[in-house]
Amino acid sequence: MAFDADDLHPLRFLRQFPEAKAIIRREVNHCSNGLLSGDAFQRLANAGMAAYNQALGKLPFEKRPETTDAAIAAISTAAHLVAFAAGGRNAFWLPAQLVVLLGQTDLGDIRLADMHLPFRCFYLGFAGGLDVGLPGEPNVIDGAYVESFARGPDNDGAPTLAFYVTSRRTDRPHRGPGAWILGHEPHFFAPLTLDSPRDTLQDALDRAVAANDIGLRPDADALARLRQGVDEVRKDGLPVVNPPLSGYERAALYNQAAYPTVRGVLALLCNALCLLSSKPALGPPEWPKQAPSSLVDAFVEATTPKRRRTAAGRLAEEGYFSLRRVDLQFGIETSQANDAGESALSGREVVAHWRRGHWRRQAHGPALMERRLIWIRPVLVRQDRGEPAVGHVYAAKEQTG
Image 1 (cartoon, rainbow, N blue to C red):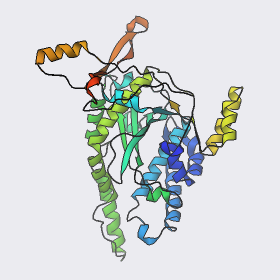
Image 2 (cartoon, rainbow, N blue to C red):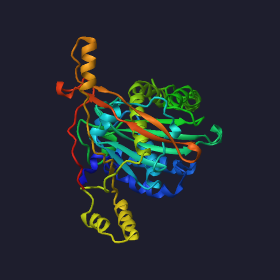
Image 3 (cartoon, rainbow, N blue to C red):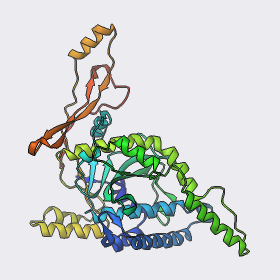
Image 4 (cartoon, helix red, strand yellow):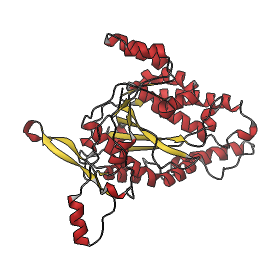
């Protein structure tokens, strides 16, 4: 099965910003344990700004953005793509049916430490995108880069689970020079530091907001340095004024507007991580239809792991990689007996609705000290009465390779 490269964020970004391929390739060996070195990030930022200035020169004056926010966003995305490449370029896709079921599942007191990531960094995509977007140009949230790393010594080396939430523009596709500038797609970065193995998503979110790891407030030190720099330049006789809003302030206002939506998306992502922790069935690798067919055939028909890795490496050099679809067979259930009881007790007819699912932490392993996550799926009640008020009904169908 092939998919459109523009449907998956990492591929779409590289198609819109082809210069990023070389930038990422140069720095992928300087990404240790999921984090770029300071020197590597500075090189990446310099290369990104050089590409931005070059692309800007090709755009008509009336189309040039007033700020460098698009460049800064692209540099940030490229840094996460370096971690993605260093982690093996692994991508998972959740079909729409599964997204609905996970959206009707409560995390409860599930701990972030219960979630066992399959890779240090990977991309988790929502097929078709969600029904919500981030502030800015028309878009829908379409997935997130999920990363695990240890913070620096200032954070006592605490483990961090980070989400780089991505979006897909819905107004029109952008191609040609400067597509990554004109077609900028909003994102949201949420690094969650785990202070205790007992931390839940809410614990980590509360701590990230209090510490401003999720930047809801402008960085006071950065603002002070900016104003000091403007004053020094002004003393040299240059006509420089403080902008109405600095980039730090614009970023904080954006995060404030996006955070209520992102909170719900993070819960959905954590539900997806719980599902991956339970080792669900995965479909075979799928390649974008734009990938060179000869290289895809070489991968599919490889008779040894070495030949398969060689074919995958050549595809990666061309900017292509595969995804794997989480392939669960759905039995969307209805409950008639309980509905009849509810109707009799209340004296009213029960409309179609979801009975929410949850996760069970099942003890297992030596001395029952380990925990396995068991998904108690949501149940659709009275499907015969039409669509539920929240969430869609999908016909279950078997995935084909």
